Image (cartoon, rainbow, N blue to C red):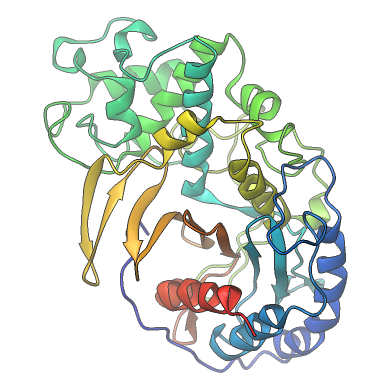
Length: 403
């Protein structure tokens, strides 16, 4: 999933009794999940309706409207979590279905998921944070941070890597190939460019892994450690990372393939001791929760972590990604930027063979929609990603609605 196309939702009925029972019962859990997010001290929350920052207005009709809408459009049987906010204020957070079919664990706002390529926004934020600290410039050439850059790649800048215009291929191997940082860098430098640097947009996971290596070189510390220290902790995000969070494994969602077969949790896939191997590091594989994605949204509304200039770099439409569903999108730094029904939208999706989701931030009015599923598609029964645009825009419309 890379573009935000105009796709019609496909909804089907589930036949697993356990899933149906969980969907019936999950409404009781939503109240508890919402209570967990009402008072969120330590985050840069911004209130928009006069009540305390980060609180849900119990009389807000938008919350009821969003839940009703989800009951109508969220595919029956599909597990996942959805959070919606108006500015810094939570509207609703809704866990649906099961995080693990075998033990009957339900999804919640604190369920941990693989957010896949949504990781890129954190890598991009780390780069602009390092620039604000005077440790690098986005105009720097790659050769300042890695050795023995061949002639065809000496023109590559950090800006090219951030905007997928370096000419690098999408990948230099499988996500779980046991590549170290130095091996990833060597493989990327040895691979022929598809196009000269700066000429063409072509989505590249390899480019963002190189940026993770740049973060380590410029900061003098581990990639995840830098993000945790400079981004996540100041935002109050306690459940985002690779291995540094103190994971309660019972909170991590089990992933399922299209045939409904369990694939384990992200931690069950091949990883190095300090996180995913480097074909995945920096471009994907980050674990997070709906709760933490709301905290990240709140942090981006304020300026405690990134100033206005840094945020303007993230959300500037640098290069066209092409058109889908009659809408042209542009890539910023770790975000896709588009005009959707007259609103500026910063968004990014993420997915692997089992999980999928999207974060969408409306820049003009601060509306947030985030959805994630640990079983995004079941052959012949559901495909949550197929209804992606309908889901996000429908939730956003209801969040904005006033009585």
